[in-house]
Image: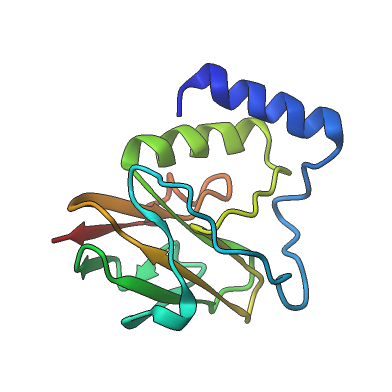
Length: 162
């Protein structure tokens, strides 16, 4: 995402009062909403009912993901169950390394910003969240925790799509 587009989107979000606290995950079940058809460089939201694989991802205050490297077949919808074993909030955000680095820098400037995208799971301590993603292109992608300081501390992983 280019910087101008990102800045415009943030300005609109802040002006409309839609930016929520990044450190405060929403409680309860997520509202049921239609599956997005928006295509990203790293894929699109997957249908949980069609998930061909479930991947368990653990996060902790050691600033690591377990596993930190995944291999996924292109086109397969994958359900991620993301569990936070730490005492502070963590998240798993899927994207390209460039996007994750840009977003991590943005989070340093706006640490209270929250997002509700299909490729992001914000997880409170001791809780788990799920997300389903379909990687539509082969390549190397990444996931990271973009809570300020966590990405820089090494909380990042790699996804190889074949």
